[in-house]
Image 1 (tube, rainbow, N blue to C red):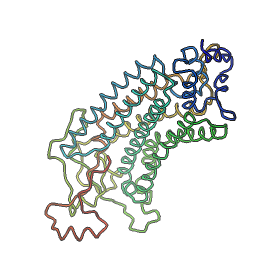
Image 2 (image 1 turned 45 degrees about the vertical axis):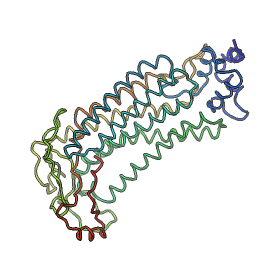
Image 3 (image 1 turned 30 degrees about the vertical axis):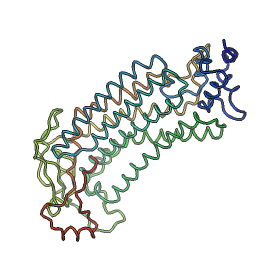
Image 4 (image 1 turned 90 degrees about the horizontal axis):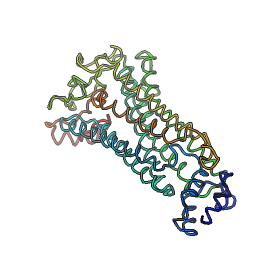
Length: 431
């Protein structure tokens, strides 16, 4: 056995023995894996890490959610690559077909992108399993996993917001409420950056105990926020149906008349939410500035009257989708995403080495790879399938904002440009 093999055999009773010898003084063993692999390669060559030595090295590393991939990870990762590839094609097919008919539901374009990110993430995991010392590949696989699931959590919160707005149109459409929601959506970017940096830095640099603790705290905070985001859709729905319509003052600190009967309208041309239903081409109603509906609050379609019947709704929707189904869909998908996020969050508070070599037992069952494949693989597949089968593009669609009519003169457009209202055709609201 090589020199590293001798070191390995002498450290089999101590999880961090070999790493401690190769880690600079004052730094925590298990950090700086990227420069450590470079150092080992320079000293002993790439072939020095034979399977027995590699097993000790991996067992001495900090345990990570999903575990460090091995040959047994190739098959399940390849399965999820295939599944998410099919889901991406399905989302893009529906989005393109909707778009060609004037129904712009950009969330399905985003969900298709989410599936592509999952394909890349599991594909990188396959590559990582071929050589666990490919630290850059491991970091990239983790990044794609974190970014993608946060997008779905944010999207479920958006759908919950739309249910809230149908129940409380005067509040859900209020400026202060939309600003608050926009800030929450924007904070997602910060959570992503926190999670990536906190996860990656200990592998890129050698850290002392103080700085390692800081990274661990950042990862834990990001994981907690991820759970809250996953559950936010349910919180919005519970709030919407716990508080009677009209009880939340939509004005807050802004002065203005209190609307007790806000005017609302929805896409009445949506007559079904069948998996294979597509609205007839040309049935979509385009709202122009100057039309009465242009100033109404846009809400999702449903047989249930907005604001419990208090709102002055334009055109009833007797054949529309049921609000009960939309609520159940968000509650179920949010629960699945919350459970998935909760397991990963719990793992960030269990700070142990991986173990699993010689007479050292595996540290904790939550770090086994099957936990990742079940809760961050199978659960997310179920969520994606549910959003497809129950046609979220129809249930949570709100009519596009009003656009300039074709008979507006150039002088009218010039005057409008000086006002607060945009004159160019506005893009669809992210649905």
